[in-house]
Length: 343
Ligand code: LMR
Image (cartoon, helix red, strand yellow):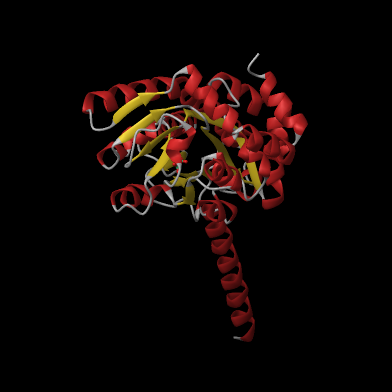
């Protein structure tokens, strides 16, 4: 009888250990198989709407990975901060509660000052220059600095140049910003820019921005056309100035806990899925922004002013000191490399 009890206990312990192992591998994605494509469910979380390059890229990743894995890998895409928002997506990535996030780099400036690059005034002339920087040695170096958190930067996805909207007045000169309160994505560089322009600034999560604009918590904000249009900020803003002074660029991030549990076959499919997503996001960013600008014009709810070359020069001049100061903070060699991508 005693023998029987021991045997039964051993079996029970084994069964418990086995089911715990199965649970933890299902949580983090891995099935523990040495060969063959692992059965996984992957979550991709982001904060913007569907009609944006970020969501289109995420859908392309989903399509490729599910197809190439014969459905063994399931990919769930959560837009509009449905799963996690700006404030908690990074920590949930680190905890492997989500396997991919795609934050605006301005939200990573607390992790490393290099992520201020998209906020450097008038630094990149277009998406291609920004892509080339982040694909290059210096950009990859900045991504690598997240590894201390157990986070891997796999790719950069562009959205595009930002433009200012506000409720108070048409902005044509740096002085027009005096006294306005502007929402930013966060970080000291964006704060310094608005400080130099005589405006106040505060960072508000993207999911709360429409209400903040509607209620007058802030007078304005800066964003890409596709973000402005898809979130209907023109319903709650009277003016938009086309200026392209800063950018929204994204970092596609995963965590090492998830990544290291993948076998070679599975990782290859996911890596290729990332490439597919990158191609779609990069190819669609400019078109989606062009379409969004057309839609904003058609809706006719914001008065649009496009800065002339000389008006842009006035902003460049005004923001020169902040550019110089932050070039040093980020690293002169990094900024030189970034500038060289415009050539
Ligand atoms: C914002 O918060 O305005 C943007 O960074 C949102 C996004 O992810 O494009």
